[in-house]
Amino acid sequence: MTANADLTEPMTLSSIIIQKIKQQGPISFCDFMEMALYYQELGYYTSSHEKIGKDGDFFTSSNLTSAFGEMLGKQIEEMWRFLGEKEFTVVEMGLAWVFFQEMSCHT
Image (cartoon, rainbow, N blue to C red; front, side, top):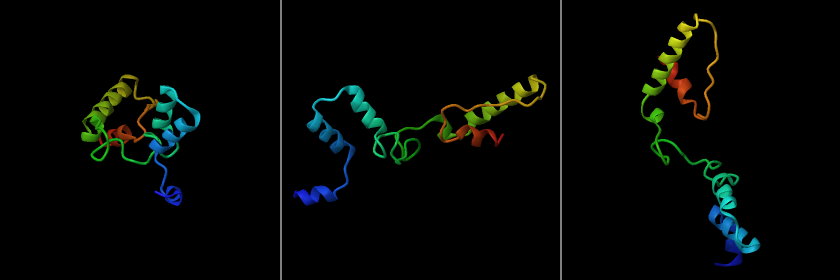
């Protein structure tokens, strides 16, 4: 491979990590994981590849069926009635894909 070919090939995260080690010496496991997970546009969580579902790395129950969201919706309705049908707020934590909102609105 020529030097020019290296410039036209897109950098992979592996090559970036290897380059960093060659330039700076050994890196800690913490630094390696930080890069592997969060490196801009190439890390696991910052890349655009599917992470959940048929084309992703894993499934969650909400990917397979709306049953979980429907169950939570019914439980929240029961709590609402118990509280005298007054307005209250439900906060969804950690579900970046808004599965609960989509499923609970169908109950």
